[in-house]
Image (cartoon, rainbow, N blue to C red; front, top):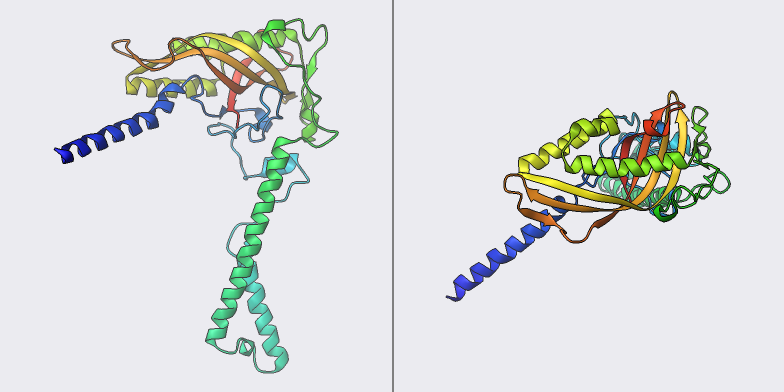
Length: 337
């Protein structure tokens, strides 16, 4: 009897663990599937500046049609003071360089002493002992360099250089939306990246109104699984990601119901133009009723049916050069750290 109770308790514990493991995947769906996806032109693989609405660093793109030809190349071009990426290969690493330095040093010592090229090693034991010492020293140096680079990259990602970053933007709060910017316009920080082909772009109240409106339309269209309407609101790339997410929900036999999306707070991270397109990245904190229901029966599966969930994300919009506010299309969604 005792053994049966223990077995039952173990099975119950396993069931609870599995439900907790799969719950976030069901509850955190929404457009973008709670990941970072899309393209931001030449800035796709660089983090947008932090804002009052999204003070943390944005997560890097997990899915994007814009390739990163050489890891770190875009960031290195945009941040000339950042350390250069390490060369690949064994002899390009700190460990390989340390071993080569040890071998060369030992050989030179043997030649100078007149005993031969490798007599300075003494014996095979001393040879391996030297390798071990040099390897340990090189490994320690390599770890220290990696730690320094990681800290420096984190600092550069979260803080723009003094004097060249974008000017602080007024918060785009819904309660005062439309009147907060008055007759002026907000400008992004394209110049902070020093790219001659990237130009500053002014964003006005009509643009922000379009962003707020498209936020609600995209959320509701996704909840209705209306891909035709989504394709009029987002780029082809984002439409393909949304189609994949909806197909995965269908495979699981669920529908992600979204309704009542409401912008709570938002501000401009950066805006710029390049080639034949204009871009604006906006940090938005919004609420939305977000639940999962069974595709066949309509029965509730997960999510809060009473209270809307709140989310903060960075949405990037794109339009043709000199386009109208209604021409903006969603081109990327990034999560905040």
